[in-house]
Image 1 (tube, rainbow, N blue to C red):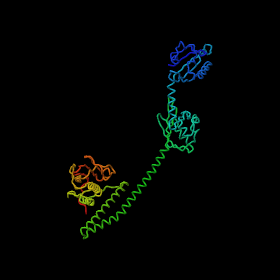
Image 2: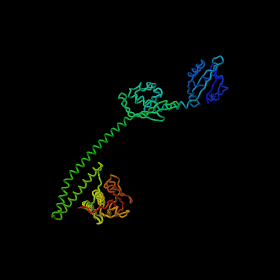
Image 3: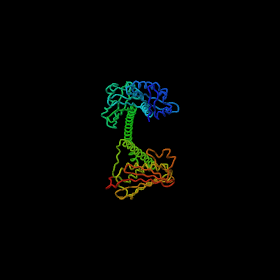
Image 4: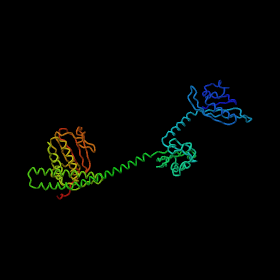
Length: 473
């Protein structure tokens, strides 16, 4: 309820309501006849006297008072003082109405504080005139224009034509209800710091249409600099990768030629009449040469993978040839070890379709790891047909197993990029159900399961199809 007083022309109270009693803390019978100004804070006396004088002269006046008197909650009051005219047309009395506007004042003060505290430039223009009605401190810092200079002026009065068009956005009439428009990459002149902004604009509406256009600018200068630096870094990384791939490819090709000569010479020497010691040395030369050639092939595969040019071929080959390839690689790693190697490939698993080179790489790596981590015992490679599929003849799936080592160390599943001889792997074993699975060329799938101190099976399914006819040798 608003406070209401009726005053005589001297400013004494003639009548008052209950809200007025609560405002002053004085009962009506005690307040009547006292001066109205005595019921207000002393700090409001100047504004009150000026408003009362205006009312006695026939005008309506208003003032705002902040009431912080003892035992009262600090409040803001908006008072209106108006004359009452008698039958003769002269002012015969004064009426005063006061309303508690604390909530509105504090809300407005909070909003103003938030607007001024925003780190991003915020401006508001009137829809009908295009003139600024709000300009926060961030806008002052960004555009180098004080709020006093900006308020009441249009963008074209403050900035050059290009910048004025960019910061003003579209006309208010072009906005839809709730629509936000973004002007990207507005670059300020170097005289203003040269910063780059994205400016988002939207309009407010009432029953008559658009009232204001609100614009909020976001500084993207640092983001653009980071994106540019990242682009340069990516290009540099691409150039480095290309140079590395070119070096690996050239190096591999350059080394392959003499390596092929070494292997060929070793093969020729092996056919000559040699004593046992010389023949063993020639075989070692041949095995080492083939191993190095296989490593060169691996390097070329890495280059092709990076260039996304690695192809999986499906050609007929003999499983016996694949078995011998794996055996040759395995024998070279058994020198000086208390480990024996056995391989079994039944005649029924012969002419098949697949990528012999890729499958050889998979099996050689698995056998090599089994040998490396078997202190003593046996590593066995058994080729068997998997008849668990719905059509064993068509699926032609082959199971390679068992790679086993007695008294061998633990094996564990490894994440991509890890090696079996990394220190953490050497120090720790794995749980009894750990598995490692790898999928890739020809749909191969490998599973590892630990059995400490017993046989360690590594099952590899090779999805190869039977080849029609026999390959010419």
